[in-house]
Length: 264
Image (cartoon, rainbow, N blue to C red; front, side):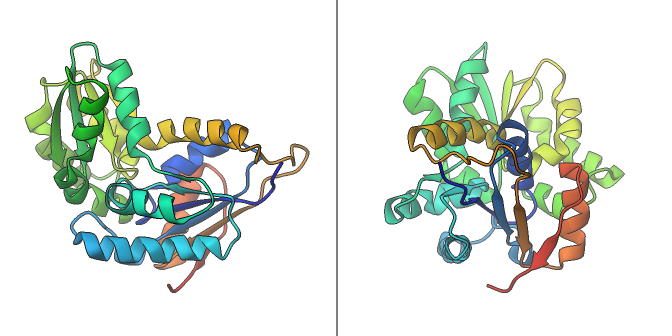
């Protein structure tokens, strides 16, 4: 048993969609979360810059004595997850392979859509992972560069958000039966995305799928929290102003949390 926290990193608030799923599935696990909202979005940035920023987040989490790190960011997973995983002695999980595996299981007609940041889509990693496991599946990828700024600015309920999602996703409508939300920010736009794509399209939350792997590894390495009689202790950090992050976090996690600003 191991009561040290699980570390989560993301380019901003999107990784909270993964945290919410962990709180639901593994309520006794402690969490340390760092969101780099001051430098979000990562998607349009060059790979070397994403690598540099991600390592800063990783090193921050290591100062918190975490027992595992979850890349709650598809862009960071695409660029540097393999490198970090090989360098650290603790388990390091990404969100891409779990999302790809879920899409393969769920698709009925072998037509899978993937939406993500420009970097995630240009890396072609989702198509590679899906077709490595299931070569018969067709994958259509689409970059959605305007989605993350909508979420980070907390405008997910606005008419502007609805218009942008509708315009961006129109090339995919009617062409897939399964859609991977290949950015952890995107589940915050899920109602709009589902409405645009239609009720017959199954949406895959790659971050939520990742938590199943977290549970498996906790059991495998026997590092589950033993504090089943105590309230889990969570710490949230952002590189931007804590107030806006806290508003989004309180709403999405449906509980009041404390967020601290940190300079990396």
